[in-house]
Image (cartoon, rainbow, N blue to C red; front, side, top):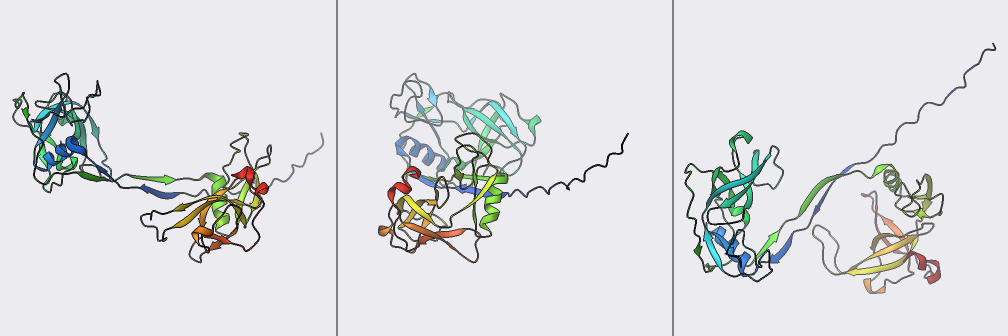
Length: 330
């Protein structure tokens, strides 16, 4: 049989680098407490645990302003004991930032003596073999108390197996210098992986180019690309360079200064339809007074030497775009 010469094959393409980046979403917010929760947190500062009597006579700890079953307003505060019983628990072998203890501990639901509901907090024990449902525990108070749930540093095993007073004592809820509000930190740490399509987009931005991808069905160009058309559900592979100029389709005026953002208020954040793109992206508008920004304004990116992304968009000086040219992108 004739000899067959195999066709040469191209070497496999190098896999594209996919970016990753650590990101933090953080927004502390301040809230008022009201008479019930204010009394509870002030009591913790004073080493006093308060609950509240529900309409059926149960003692709820932590106290709520309204009955959990009927929704009726509650105001009858009572003092319960700093000792209690573990009703259930789970072991935490790897404490995270901001948790009550830096060493492994148990999360425990503790029904304090005199209460009918359980309080969730940390239980400081050497290992999971040292904790069990039904064990007796006691509050360990924090040294510097400010009127927060962290004034309870944690629970510890109680050497006295006898329960504390079963009957809670009525309490006025009045303290000197009461706590009326708290600032609650909310933070999420995670690693963002944009994927291949957006990694190509980010890589192109480093070259001062804006790269999108076109849907093979509806022909829309998505910037930033998503790897698939959200309308047709089809993978997008054709890469299209958009912009750099674009049109303001809509905008808002920001009057509240963001933390760690060195931009003076008021400023304008806008949706910008880049030339050749099928949907707008959002960016800050600069180089023009905030009250002169308008729909249809033609803009171009402004790059800083120390950044791989456009710092903001500014007017190009061109006439405003006709409304019909961008009305489908609003």
